[in-house]
Image (cartoon, rainbow, N blue to C red; front, top):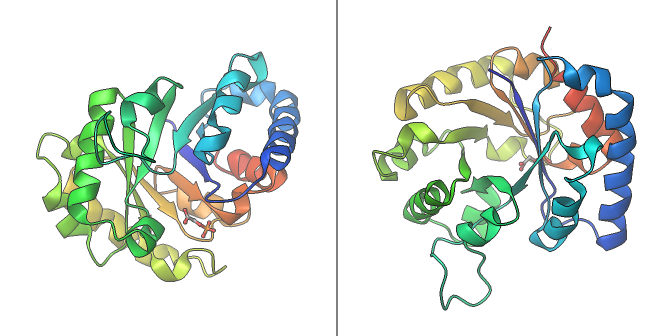
Length: 236
Ligand code: PGA
């Protein structure tokens, strides 16, 4: 199966910065069109702020971008309806969003999201045809898995992100990540497991060697370093 490389922009980039990133990545991808045709090219997913989604949705119709998949950083725990400020999974799916981060540690910490909220988001994503990427740290893997609807468990992707590794430059030691991948597979089943937390072009290869890919925050903000991460995730 292909690897996943997800760019999580978080609350970064004005309109002009997003556009500039888009054209720089387009240049990068067009140079590597040959590599993209090979089977080892990872699945590249961009999760920008929702405000930039229509722009990237439009870009996807151009040939260079056809291998770029769209994701969102969060999704409403409610369906369509009177929920001011929310974006439902069904709405996101209409912009060809295929993946949604759910339960990122920043959402849990600053927006007080519970395991139950995450479980509701997972179900709504799956109903809308969006693959949920459930983010966990090692404190609550089992509790989060237990909160999900039993039928949803093996339909998700899990991203393991340790709090102390996010945005700090201190990526988690590979040996520890190996152990946690086992714990995740025990709790969720045979789901794809990604690593996130200070991933950069230099350390990507060691994580993709035994995981299903990487979730990238800071190093996704420049098209150049994100492009290098994509290349580093190409399998031998
Ligand atoms: P980081 O963020 O790459 O800046 O550590 C990862 C994430 O929080 O998704």
